[in-house]
Image (cartoon, rainbow, N blue to C red; front, side, top):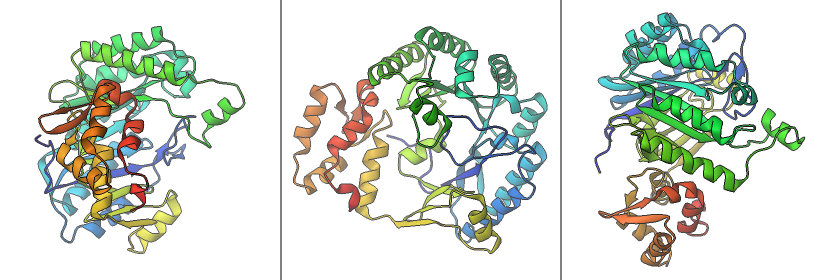
Length: 387
């Protein structure tokens, strides 16, 4: 299988944690702001980036996530992108992705983002149903979300992606079907569909505990996922990863880098890096990150040396999320090392319709995608993750 990213290059992830409001379901590190992104934030990002540039490889994917990175004003975003290009060899054909909330999308902003080199815009619509958006505590209504997509479609981006959520309190099949019909008619080449997870300490978690809101059962959530698969595939999308669908040529190179073992440098509070044989994590707080970066220090809160054992484990965990799967011989060697029979395990998965062997690769089926965590737990030797 040919990877869409260069294994000799690295990816950049830039975390911009600031949001105009806090959605009740979100568990990412984010901070509410009424005045936009604080002045000087991009300077700190560039200062952190400079810690990596001594012998850094070329960069062929850049991803701005959040939070709401589109809150960064276009001139400041352009200066940040220019600074990153000055510090790293960002290839001319690099994929540059920006996440944007619908209410931040305007004709002027779109033109500026394109001029700065963004070729992939990911719009967090989540739904086009007013009741669902209200349940998610999103700022933008359905008209704003649709207008943002329509404006972006004509702005000249090479790739346009939408985020959609399922399993939301109050979301019925009819509402979801209407969303999917809307998406299918849009000039998108990528859709990310996330089944709502209930995270402790979020507002939604508190509401469910109080009985104010309820989530669908596991069976209902699985039915909705199957429904999404059927409808998007019928609309010409390939279900290429557990939560992601793409039309031909629309796969996200940056995310494939995570799933298929590439190197990534993460910048900003809470960002993670997988780089030069280490997994490092920045603190989930602004001040701790700011203090270290201001002092010219790597702001690592977590550092793990990646052993071959851990690398193989991650290869299985993340590689099976992609429809292309993983090399069977690698899986077999890992399982055999623990005294298990790889062929017997794989045949059991195949007999239940969860996986298949194809051209020397172990791949999950659509049904396997629905229970991918259970499949991975079944394959991993007990205690393997502790090695």
